[in-house]
Image (cartoon, rainbow, N blue to C red; front, side):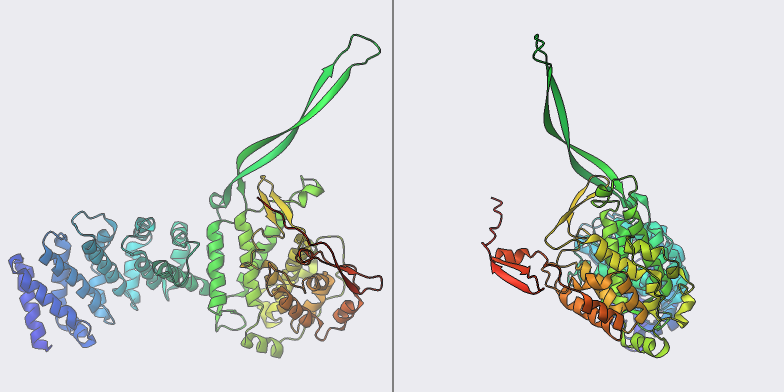
Length: 610
């Protein structure tokens, strides 16, 4: 299309718009359709911005002042194509973006379209077309244009954004939520002030996180679009060091309070007294005991809430799936978090342990079977550990830096074994709180050394050593509020095949001990070698735990004679119970000279629940 023909079409269209000659609707539709078809060309879009600014203003005002419905099919079609035309001419032409987005009346008109339940549409497909095009105008009007992003953000943040999300959160029949999230992402991208605005608005952050459903995956169409944009929004916030602020912002007892239904059985003793009239037969008292079950519902408050768990899940997915394992102070490339965030996560882990151990009012026997943590606390622990399992596994760049710049840091050999829990031992040890726990220490120590000094080794060994029994001995854990949880470990869900909590703990210990003498020694001092050796066997609930344990032992023994001697000095004391072998009619034992023997026994019959 030549410049003259463009001018002629616009001139013809302007006459109709200014005179409101709606009796010539066919011509209006034809003209705007021609303009839309040519708007895909960058040269045409620039021509509009240079020569036809007045036309854009007149078209925008016409849309604002005319009710859009589908009673008049031709007029509706003209308005729909006009909005699409305005959407398209914004692409890569800041001048057109400025004309459209700086018109506050037009932006309010678009927002009203999106927020109101407009009854002017009889056909849902027509309403969907208008609303989709309207939301796209907002996005295209700000892409790569910081001035317009600032202007629109000032207009819509936070109240209008909250209304947009709230309206479609429960029912998004037209699939507009991904567009609204895309708008937020484009507004905060490359602008730390707007990121700070978003990261400081608790209601909006919570609403965005609540859009994540538990079954969201990358191949689920609509849900995948929502998750992908949420993923990008939080990745942008994490990279710019807002994780700690977000995690603290989301902390609220309103969300960390869980409704727990528990059943307790109480023994009631009733005494009956029988009196006789003769002196030879004394009065006798008979006691009968009956059991009475009562069901109570109460609120159990932990430290963590579901939205904080979702935040951790997002961080874990970005680090793991996006391979962003580097730490900023060491290597900026492919990093998502800094040392301060690492320290914060260890502090949160330690506080969850302290909450779990705070049962001074209970008897010792009861303490071992109760917990003050809620389900979100358990989930948070799992994600913290999973994140550390990834970042302690150095990338090639981190490994090269560690080996070339930092020497192995030996620790004093004065951490003596005691009856104190390993976690408390390391957290209370003055050495673990030395001056190395400072972000500036990245110039003196490698990452894994600093994480050991902060207490990560003690936490991992404490999780394995203090909370897991033998595989055949499932324990029953009860919350202090009466909730009964059957589990074999610290996290009541981690024994599921898709969790692998113990594997992540052993991965961390193996990673920390790689070519690091100080970490190797501390793991030995805290009894970590024995417990890792105990996992060098098949575990149906933790696939590949044997392989990870062997890897950890290999790293612990490399260039460490003390660790090698410890393993060499170990003797077989017995064989762990193995229900799988018993099911096959095989029993394993140890002879007097320390060799293993097998013998056939009657096959163990499985319980029939019928």
